[in-house]
Length: 152
Ligand code: ADP
Image (tube, rainbow, N blue to C red; front, side, top):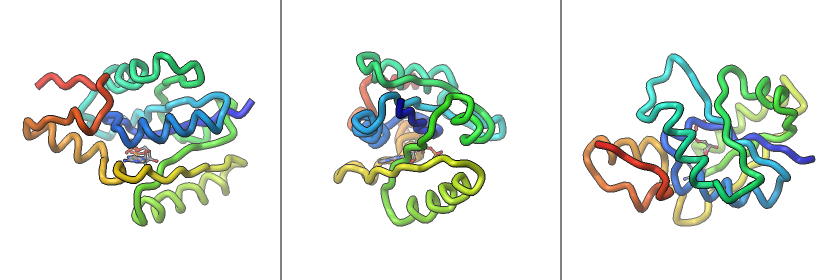
């Protein structure tokens, strides 16, 4: 059984994440979307909201599970018996950042990190830009799946 974890903050899930998940499920038997919970970080959307947006977006995909976790991603992988970490790459900045994390995870565990390049046309989308548009009263419906509900 090839089980992978796709870790992230997903605050909120964007069409960029959605694309990586859709393509990731063709590579693995099971893909766990792991929403990181860091008590020191301030999120725009609660843990429950972030989870609900993703669960509803993939309710017809049997291979997709959505969970929350805190602590090290490699420890969560061990707990869930997952051998792969899936991550998306948008640009050179992502690459440098992800490279250091993947090397560290590889040093501390046997886990392999699998990278998918963003589909062209989605690489500019980030949760932080989506949050900025929301904060300023803009319409984010072209940037996020329709299951993301914003109550302003
Ligand atoms: P984190 O806080 O761990 O960066 P994010 O929720 O921002 O969490 O991102 C989770 C993963 O999704 C990362 O691998 C990130 O590179 C990827 N990702 C984010 N936005 C996009 C996008 N537009 N296209 C492809 N991958 C993306």
